[in-house]
Image (tube, rainbow, N blue to C red; front, side, top):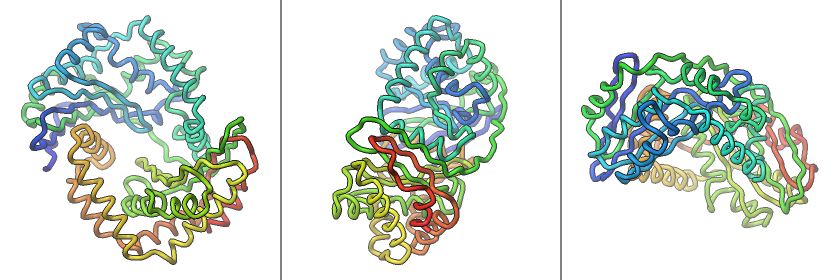
Amino acid sequence: MSAQISTLEGGLTVASLNMPGAHSVNVGIWIKAGGRDELAGENGIAHMLEHMAFKGTNSRTARDIAVEVESLGGYMNAHTAREETAYYIRIMPEHMPLAVDVLFDILNDSTMPEEEIERERGVILQEIGQSLDTPDDVVFENFSAASYQGHKLGDSILGTAESVSGFSRDDLARFMARYYGSDQMILCATGAVRHDELIAQAERHLGNIRQAEMPKRTVPTWTGGRIIETRKLEQSHVIVGLSAPAATDGDRYAMMLLSNLYGGGMASRLFQQVREQRGLCYSIFSFAQMFSDAGVFGIYAGTAAEDVDEMLTVSCAALQDMKHDISDDEVERGKSQMRAAILMGQESVSGMTDSMARQLLLFGHVRAPQDIADSVNALGKDDVVRVINRLTSHATPAVSVIGPSDKVMSNDRLKGLLA
């Protein structure tokens, strides 16, 4: 399978991937703007606009949109991320023209009725409240703020109750006019789709699509901060992370392999040494989060307050040990898991759409899953060690903890354990 990509009038990118054996089509429009592209005073507006997408156009009410899509067995949804906003519909192949028509309609002719704005504002305020009541959500939000203090990557995608309460229809319309244009859009479809048919559907809407601005992004500075929030909880939720390579860096696959070996499953170093051998936690894992110009490598754990420092000490030692004690068999196991995940991902119509769109946003091209698997297969333990050294050589860790105690080792002590 290989993706077909075309650039149409005004800069609209159209990409498709025909998946033999698929019985449905997943079609969506990805916007090259997300939470980090909000201006001062706009925290949460990208997410609120995403909520408003299916709330009515000049030719369709919110109910019309839902009935049209769902009466044909379709499913529609959207999401907002740091660097993108996406709107997508999964439907039977013969109804793809309707899906494309609905997507362009909601993104080019949305009316955003005042009553719908107020209704959805209430929904989002409930969502923010639910997030604040969920410690393992809060600890990640605080971790972003500790990592990139003063930068949009450190802000919550949801926004705050204060910011969301203040958005007007004009504010939403300005954000949409700024970024929702043909040169900022990628129309993607995977499954039982033909590229020429997708282009034909897109061309029907070209005359109605406005032009947009390219987001003016500033490269974030890693601040290595510390946010400790005390709450009456049964355990402490802990995240420690380091500045890491960006998604466009040549070490991206090596970092993913490191995360797999270090804390990616039951056979990983963290799971075996922290949970199985010492019983210091129930849940622990590592993660590699990569943006277009920055990245984070970190660990999350939920543990008893009195065990936090011991858990962190063991976790740091486990990472250090990997510099000198990593076997070829261990590396091969991690690579096998990664290759399997990449290749099995080809079975998901919606997963392939998302993968294709993200690659286009980041790199401007799409690599075949087998090519990515080959890159993973070429990795060796020297690559893993090199990435560990990159991660631990200079930056101060960022720390986020929420739990019953604020007694957590200092960032400087963690830096020393990692160095």
